[in-house]
Image (cartoon, rainbow, N blue to C red):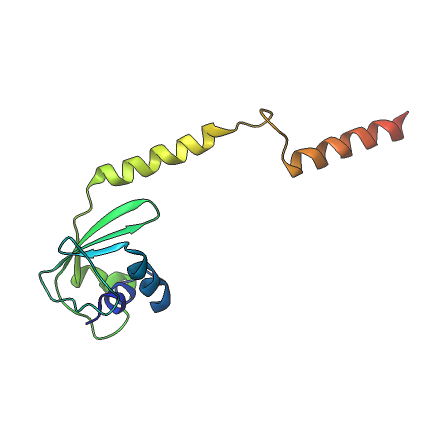
Length: 126
């Protein structure tokens, strides 16, 4: 089975074309080799996939006939992604929250609208 079709079948990508583009960009590796979307995948192969700033590591257990339901995915792959990858994602989330707190820095468009509404209401009261 093609690697792009396999990743689509086990629900790592929403469509085949998105999986194909990920392979073309070099986000998918099979046995530590960057692969094209047409590369064949066999049971026992190790797939490393970079998605949403997380490096997923998968082991191919079997090849599905077609796209699977979410409950059946574990029969066809073994997820060996280290927990540190998900923890670093949590840290990135907190870093983004810290980056700009409300009321600090240049106002956003929403902030400016709120300020305009506030000043307009004061002028109407006077």
